[in-house]
Amino acid sequence: MGNFVFLIRPLRFVAMAISADSTPRQVTLGFAMGMVIGLVPKGNLIAVALMTILCASRVNLAAGMLSAFLFSWVGMLIDPLTDKIGYFLLNVEPLIPYWTVFANQPVVPWTNFNNTVVLGSLVTGLILCYPLYLLSQPLIARLLPILSAKIRRMWIGRVLLGAEWTGKIIKPTL
Image (cartoon, rainbow, N blue to C red; front, side, top):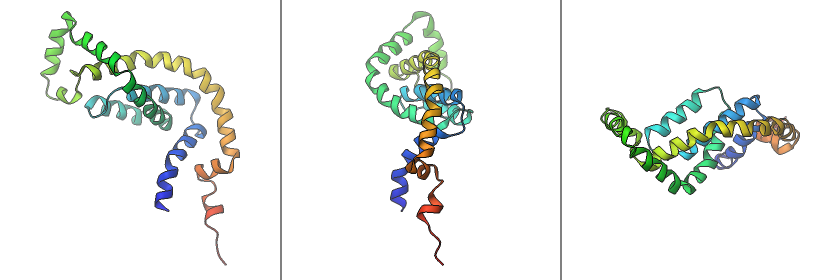
């Protein structure tokens, strides 16, 4: 039973993201924030801080996590581009004293900001966050009620949402 739950958990997470009582705005914000998290390489304080912001915000966490997963794959594909963006930003002459002061702060080495890919990915994600939010909001607002209704009608959707666990799987014996 433990392995079954482990395999079903991602599907349950997606079903809850679609049919939760979140507004389309919360789902869209979660999706856009997840995009930023997905683009930034993991294993540094920037990724941890972004994930903390996602978890502490009133956005759809499931949409954010799904988006972070999807955009992690996209992030690997655009690493050559983000490397060039980060290299450019780290070598802009007026910013070099700022980067030096910033690098000498106690916690900053854990952010890995001096890595060209990390800095370029963060800047790319932050620049694309608002346009993605604006472009995806009408689509999510239109599709969310339709998909939610379909999931709630289907038997597997009700099982994934937990409505059928007690009635169908565990039957009382008399």
